[in-house]
Amino acid sequence: MNQPLIAARELDEALGGPCPPRLLDCRARLDDPGAGHELWWKASLPGSRHLDLDRDLAAPPGEGGRHPLPGQAAFTATLQRLGVTPEVPVVVYDDKGGQLAAARAWWMLACWAGHPDVRVLDGGIQAWQTQGGELREGEEGAAGASDWRPTYHDDAWVAADALLSAGGVKIDARSRERFRGEVEPVDPVAGHIPGAVCHPGADHLGEDGRFKSPQDLAAALPQADEAVVYCGSGVTACHTILAYAIAGRPLPRLYPGSWSEWIRDPARPIATGER
Image (cartoon, rainbow, N blue to C red; front, side, top):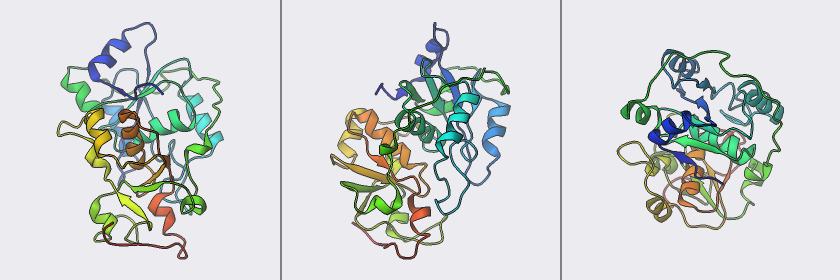
């Protein structure tokens, strides 16, 4: 897998090169499904297309949780609509240091759909603006369609009924307070999956909103040859998988349904407190 991050200055140079990357704006707000498109429409990187968290990167909420994976056919149609092909690099970005939909888009494209060259803009749109990058209004239909049909890697994720028997450590990427069951601002049940360890995704970033060094990440990430990562709904967990990629460590698998799916079955065990 290629280096999964790209700096703003490096992106600026790539956009002027012989094979400029396809830009996908993944900004989102969990409390406002239409906010991401509005942000892209008002001001975004030139030539970018909007990749919507709720419409493109997830199926409708239900028994599979708040952001279940879309079907393969649906995601293939999204990639074709956006003109994504394996021959052209892709850069995804958001305004949360990758913690929201940019990391989810990276995982779905690189780990699940197998695109060979997907990178996340380190520091997001703020880093682009800091180095003087131009912003423009979004432009619908700015890119032609493609006919790419990915070969999906379903071994990159784990279903709920296989989670407890899956090998390795279970990593909970939510805050420590949510892990301990002290607070639960989103889901109706607090706690964590038994046997999991807590490693909040916010710990991957420095004060400047960029990822910490590969060495710092490697030292802080849970040490395991095999791991499965989950969060509230399978979105920010992808940030932890991205951190493993930056650190050059074997990638954990994703539990896409995460806590929001796990608690829908009252027979599934729940733990609280520290580990």
